[in-house]
Length: 399
Image (cartoon, rainbow, N blue to C red; front, side, top):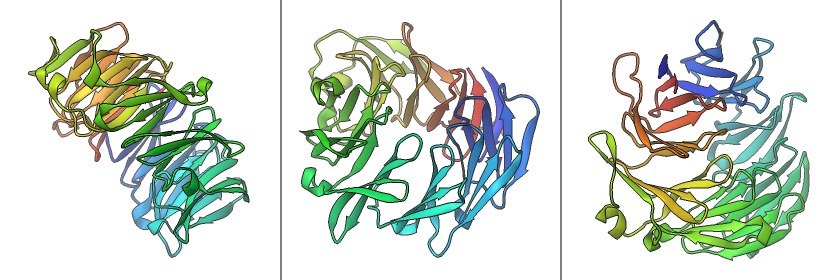
């Protein structure tokens, strides 16, 4: 493992994996892969609290939310090209929409603002519902849906550019809306609460299908957009398929396992293959907290709320279960290989690779010699470089 001492306040890979941007207070540092050579340093107006690359990897969005400022740095021009300052209501979040549109969320969710860099123009969308996300966009930022609550009634606003194309009375379809989630291919949109989910056509807004669930907590589209996984109570996972008008394709649950699967338990910082523990077999499954698909949509991994158990499924069956020493914080699959990484608030990282036994790897230490108790992880698209974080500091290393 090659460690680079990026003990920084923020860190992010570019979309194409060619660059990494880091921040120390108000200094922006940009390095080119393999991230060990000369680097560019620019000075922002105030302390940078987050970094986001646009889809074409040429612009960096640097938020300085404590001071109500957002700045954009152009990597090719080597200069700041825009500074946006808040008005009466502070910015609470900022993210890219496509290449040159920025979505700004205003304090108390009073409004959303879409800022276009090339036109130097801004469009305000008033009274969005305070859920996250309350708006979704297609890849180029031309079409969007926003959940709005006006006079106590929830509506889904279908918009393009500056125009309102359609108002969908979402409360009549599912009741109160708890979330939106767009398919990767920009064809479908799901809207849901804890009891019901509906699938809409992204271009027309027409309802394609709906399903009633019990305590729906999370949803996840497969990268190929063919499958939609629903995480429900009692550890139940429901898989819908687009080829069947989003009817139920199959259901997964660790409480009703009959097939054989590999089971590993962490003991003294190593993984031991053994029979499934009584705790895993007999414990009552709780609500699914998170679902992640592999890059080719052939595997999915899940864990439950406040759980130490990780489950890896291959379509219809459980193939691997792992009992870790602490509650799982984050997991992510590589984007070009069936390789999963999981962190759980320790200095260990769990890796599962297709066709291999899982392993634990120790994370690097911070510059001051202290251990990094990893709670977040991010892969570069090159499948070698990773960013580890404990929520405050960041480290970059190459596996």
